[in-house]
Length: 460
Image (cartoon, rainbow, N blue to C red; front, side, top):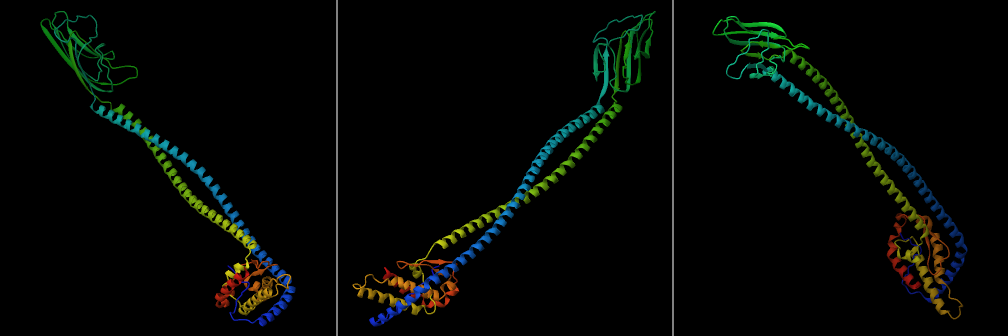
């Protein structure tokens, strides 16, 4: 903002030479008086300006101290948040490890479930097989035709090598033994036929583990004779013995069917399988509970991470604000330094005139008359004077004295400083002037601006 220092206005009326001479004398007297008072007034105003600058610097120092404290507080908060973030990162790492463990356990559970399903399928298959399983065989000595076996003086095992039916593969055509595969009731029947003889009889014996069970016997002196017999036995499985059925006969045909009944053995197997399934179910329940607990912990950690992310975002915003404040403070320092070191010329002041003070109109008219009269005197007495009188400098000094008397420093915070050569004046603005100080002077602003430009032209 440009501040008016000298308000120079020309009235436009014709001034006689005698009035100019009188005004010249008056200005010379005023100049003589002002030259004595100028140094003291300039020093006082310089001290006032320095005090104002010191006050502004103190305020800026206090503001900087507050901002430093705030920045330190924000830095401490930032460090705390960083430590929390590090802790959360560790917790997140642990959580990832737990998730990996959970995934591995889930894979194990899937494998166990698959094995359980396979076991259940096998058990069901065994149940179905046990329900429909049968043991039966039918065999003969010869595949076809006829033949003679015997006679024998002792018991001789007969091996029925031609097997017609062998369900369950319990009968061995190599040894002639039938080995019961499971505990149960078995029914045996056989039929024998032989040629009669006067001195010999025919018979076949069923033997179980070396014990004679029953016999089919026939004694016919001549022609062809036959006999048959059957029995149902409860065969028990023993640790180191088998139930063997041995048929001894010259010629016999046996056919037996045995219903499958493995209820006791199957019940034992089913009980074991049920026990394993119960253990696996308990293990699965425990793992489900652990997985749920881990999921809840994971959700809690995710919520904490979200909160910390929000806090981190807020902290970033605060850091940005601090950076903005710091830049503003630095800019204010630069501006204050520029305002402290940068001056305003009289030309700038006159170009920026926007207001006046009471009585400035008359002062400007007198100043203009002095300037014009002084130039006329220099022109008139240029041959007699060794050096031209510096009316511009005299006018500036006089204007400075008048400005000081109008309390320019007190009202507008403008300090007029030092010796001013070549029609220029440097101003030091200590603070921003208040517009209220210029409100009574706005009416004279246009005319003051016009005549100020005229004075500038005349100076050049």
